[in-house]
Length: 337
Picture 1 (spheres, rainbow, N blue to C red):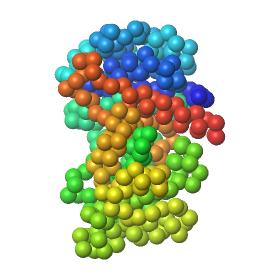
Picture 2: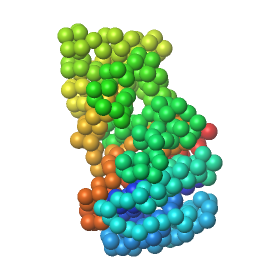
Picture 3: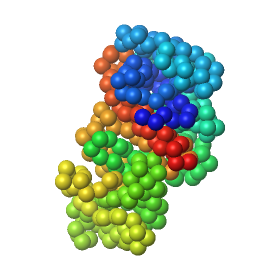
Picture 4: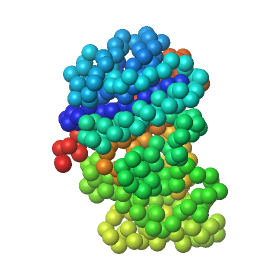
């Protein structure tokens, strides 16, 4: 693959979760998976302990600047920064949350400065981050803010080998979803998605399928009017501007194999409408990628998994997929300016 101009920055995630061990396991498979060079921000001792718990031959190479990472990558996991904490898998605490936050902030800074080709974020626990002053619903919103954008301009897309799906509303109660949907929001996010698929995924004319909110996509208003009053006007506006958009589709049919062949991405109305099919199809290879940012950001599409941390059973597949995707997007952006 064409490598990114700069190595990827990886944030350590919550140290009590599976982040450290799947980062180490990913580095151990770097050649097999043709991964672009990356470095981890903080947590050198954590990574050594996590690698040891999995009996991986995975040395840590301390670096002072990101541009040292490419040379160091063949010898071990490059780690920049001195922040660290004790490795206590399955036992989250505020010290670990503080490390997760500082690692995320510094990885983001490196990407904004152009010293990193993009960032890959290991899983965090939002409840733990809140204890150390994190005021955002999730990492996606933090990254948009850090890039100087409105927090809603960072669009979450879940991507796997079988499906790409975007939840238009994310971290809110199901009862709040109908009131959060507007024609202008659907239109704006669909445009961000289309632009990103062209720029970052090389799809010249993206085909977008938009889900309905209600059962049977409202069935002509029998089960709800959001389709007619909110979703259909957005679709009409997008079509008028030349976008290949269909819908609103009943969500119980749009994710079948035959239906998936007709579009490049599905826009869902709420979190689980997008994530349930993605995780059912591609759990071990699912990637959370943030669209609409000036920097590249991906993450494995799973959580901290505190219950299995340190037990040597966490699958690194989604982290490997996130590293692979970030490297490919960064390389594509570098090649096309």
